[in-house]
Length: 348
Image (cartoon, rainbow, N blue to C red; front, side, top):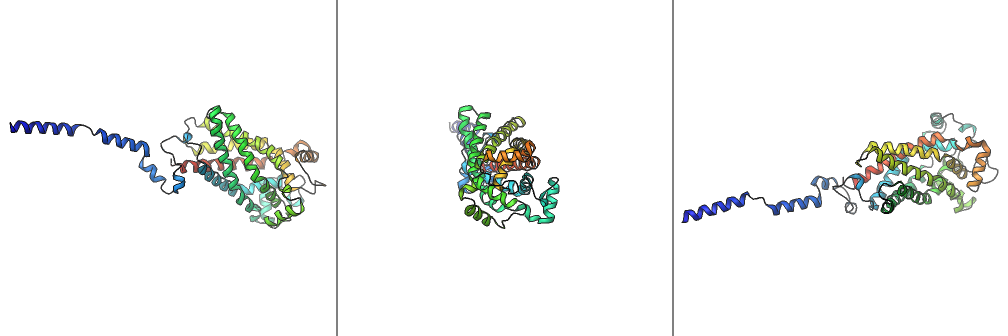
């Protein structure tokens, strides 16, 4: 009797040991689903807590949520810094090439000739004249720009559906309006500093002169309407082309530096070429060339007439190539840095 009881107990024990521990397995699976792989958590350990709260896990890159405003702002500011630090000298050359009646010392035969002459006669550091005001203001402007664009994509996506070009068009236009409110005064000061033989030795001196002599706040926003006419269609073309090229080149929606580089380069170059005439008018409004203008140019229509009288249709595309060579790689750099920061800050 005792032997039979022992044998029965051993059989039950063996049967229990052979059964899977479903409770532990279920708990482990739930934990993995909720918290993701431990390597993902470790990869975000360097992030501040207020950013880490917005991190997402176990999703494809293109499915990342668009309500992480802090991440969009940080990524946008980083993209702006990278873009302007690398491409600012080309921006200065673009401004010089767009001058309607450049003085003898600033008549260049091409971009490379312009860079050589400026470095030889004015010094290498002159290629970054006016960079200080851009460095202070462009970061917040781009942070607001990308945050607005991402929020616009989220809101329009509810109505038009995800990846619909109409949503990208609207989001890009609104983002441009927000950006231009901040950057129009900055561009006015920057382009005064970029002029050949600029009478201003510092950004502060330039701002003081514009405020005291040229009419206060109005002088800083003289080109605002032109800026809107230029940037709204430019950013609409840019964002729509970028999103469509990205979708065509990367239908799986995975993170790819090459795709962002290619899409940004093509989209930025196309948008830059189309809107060059507006930039020529904006440059005239900001620089107020005394050699061309007998009196101050006061608005877009007046500026457009002045440019056309100075050289016809060809004058409207002065500096088109430097503008494309500035905006196309700048846009590519901007998107690569922005998408890279967004990808890494969200923990993927």
